[in-house]
Amino acid sequence: MKALQYRTVGAPPEVVTVPDPEPGPGQVLLRVTAAGVCHSDIAVMSWPADQLPFPLPLTLGHEGVGTVEALGAGVEGFAVGEPVAVYGPWGCGACSMCAQGKENYCLRAAELDIRPPGLGAPGAIAEYMVVDSPRHLVPLGGLDPVRAAPLTDAGLTPYHAVKRSLPKLVPGSTAVVIGTGGLGHVAIQLLRAMTAARVVALDVTEEKLALARAVGAHETVLSDASAAAAVRELTGGRGAEVVLDFVGAPPTVTSAGAMAGVEGDVTIVGLGGGALPVGFGSPAYEVSVASPYWGTRAELIEVLDLARAGAVDVHVETYALDDAPKAYERLHEGRVEGRAVILPNG
Image (tube, rainbow, N blue to C red; front, top):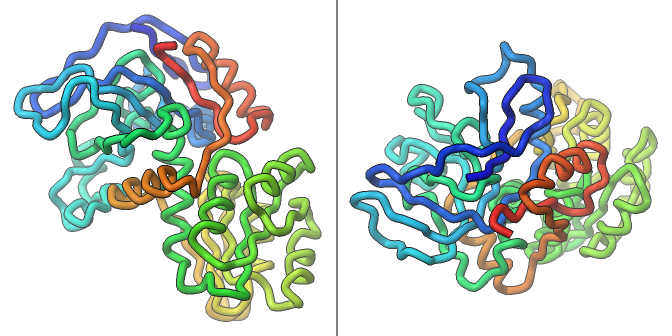
């Protein structure tokens, strides 16, 4: 089969031919319909060799949707031909976090060398992929697979981030979304669907802010050195109750801290390498700073339910598998509107 692999440290990914996978006991083989392209892949491909926590080559793709092709011995609950989405942050299934469905925070994943597809295990940008357990599959339930694939990360991750701050997103509150790309433009829709907050979106170009307005942002602000002051002005000097940073670079994290109001939440989602120092009086009093990772299995089910209700819709650009390297180039250059999605089987 064909697959997109990261094969050499520092080199771009390549489309190669690899052996067809077969499911072992307890595993499920999927014929991949669609796979999302994510900035975190670019972050991984920027790491030096001594920081890579897994061996190469690696088949990329941690956002996957497909149809069940074959069931390993002992697998029940799914039928061949059934359309499913893949829950990506695999865990051991037995620790106290996994028992709550929080496999994104599995306490034994590192010890047992359990890694997500596309981030250590063979991923979804391939004609076929093996899923380690049927508990990591969620029925699509009639959703368009091309638009559903990004929901497994670009939908789930912002949903988890928004959900932790729901008590603060009351009428009259303000939520700021920094970075309106793959995750950010979904976060705006989630905030509009789940809260009564005013949504302020920040990005670096007017073209990106146009997408933010199209998906529901009430206000848009250019993300530059004056962004925090602009948000303060919009909120009458109070600051935002919630700031979601989907870039995570040092300048955006600094802005996030400066625009958060007293008792606000700053959630750093992006992998830009920024950190927010917390001390007396800076940021504002009782600001909570968090850096979450992905979301729970139950939350993925909730995200797909929201999509079925029409509350969230991912803007996508589609690419054939042979063109997948081009999709990563466009993403790296900031030229993807929404989410790039690879169609490995046409």
